[in-house]
Length: 77
Image 1: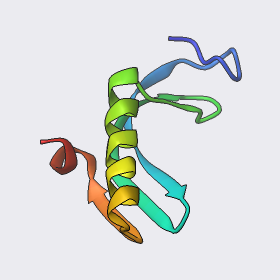
Image 2: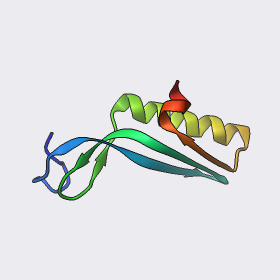
Image 3: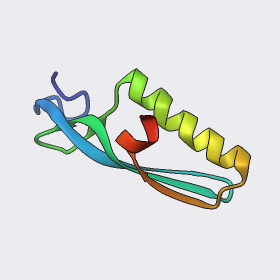
């Protein structure tokens, strides 16, 4: 897929770290599958992965977790 931001790069599979903050909750999820532009570095998550990451963050926020750091594969297994 061509990058929507720089319009020149090709997006290739890789992994990223996603950090989300909501109120007093910070969630860091490592090794999240993504497509990454080889020119500008823009990162794209699929809808399925986005839903999974947001679900984790929502559960942590509701539980009152302050900081959660985890690996994506382990979190979604």
